[in-house]
Length: 96
Figure 1: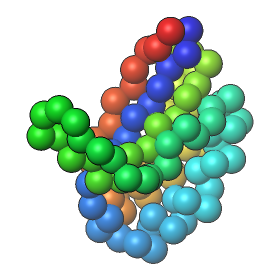
Figure 2: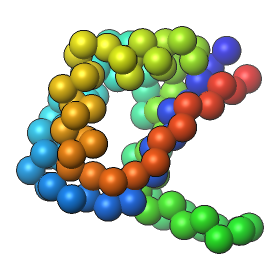
Figure 3: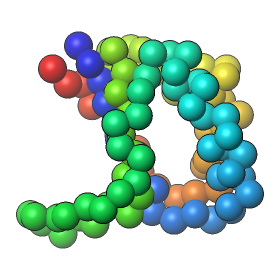
């Protein structure tokens, strides 16, 4: 069953770290059979008061595979860069 990793980047706090993150993240996502579905873009809020800033959605073949990517040794240094270079929210969602 597919899984979706949803990140909402609220603020960039260190652009240099985020640039290094962007240079390496795609290769790790692809290594774990992930693919980007959304990478920023305009959001039209039609209900409620949630205001996504920079939405990112990555699809993986399963929730287990998404966690393998997130906890992988390849992603670990990039995760550190993202956490130090931005502020945001993340959630993994199992789909159908």
